[in-house]
Length: 441
Ligand code: HGY
Ligand code: MN
Ligand code: MN
Image (cartoon, rainbow, N blue to C red):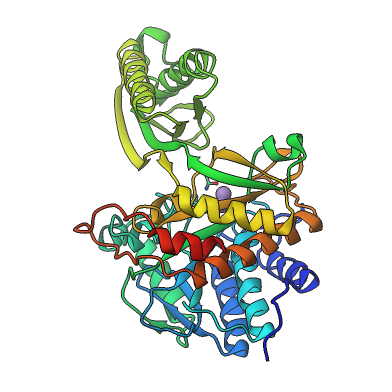
């Protein structure tokens, strides 16, 4: 007996509260960094909820966690929905968790209503979207689409000195009931719900963002290498001070990059000093630079400017400089057909929406390389995110999940062409006209 599936808002809100208690911080946020004990606890909780429902639970070698609800035709690649459970060290309780738990709520709503979908509907929690503990970000989705290097990442050291390979092995081992499966499988489409992490939707009073594209991101790690010396006895002309070089370069970049281009973003988020002693001129100063822009060409010109300013400052302060690229995520557009399916879902639900470009990167940007993909944004208070004060109203949480359910149902009905994450396959083919009609009906 099937009824029309409904989002159970109370259940979803409770889930979000339950997961927020894993890695909860004093200030009301979460510290649930990738592959940490807290991340494993969240994966365990999600898997147990899935087992209780009789869903299929499996993971791959980079610890992406998949939960599948079988459809009528198992030969058809599934509709995939989901996001990530890892957080920033002082993250909010909604970044990633909202999309992951909304996806689980969709599976539960389908189950409660006894709906049989043509395609399986599958959800995923991607590993290490944030890239804060272990760089780069989006490791799980990068590996899934064939551009990640799991073996090459194993010796990466985290900000806490741990080795990624050890933490990954412990994470996989912590969930032995999740069957292992190869990295990367065909999916017919992917949709991710996420908070906007900016102020646009809230200011416009619009509850749903149809994300059409994501700006590009690059992460650089800059090290100035000088000579440790005595703080008291070393006159200026004898100093080879990497801190002086770093401060000058950063000050100059802050002056010339963002003021010159309102679309540009440049952030120095982390700095380390060696030997880090109050009365020693440092021997080495290392800091990260996160740059963003919708244009790949302008990202490259910002990167070139960073290189020039750092080399000039190194020369002036008689130190060496080393610049390494840690992450390079090109700007990308989402699939207009999937955006339209989300738009039609909003129409049927009488939910206003607006198109929006994402300033934050997301796993969906990588997945869009192998399957028709789009995102659903919900507003967050004052646009605050990557901050423990991150907040989303219950109403917006419910609306986002309802639109995801309606979208997943449309996509699970449609007979979209499947995609295989392999370098050989061209970018995905457009949906057939019949599939579009079916998906949008
Ligand atoms: O940094 C980002 O854009 C994402 O929120 N991790
Ligand atoms: Mn996120
Ligand atoms: Mn984030």
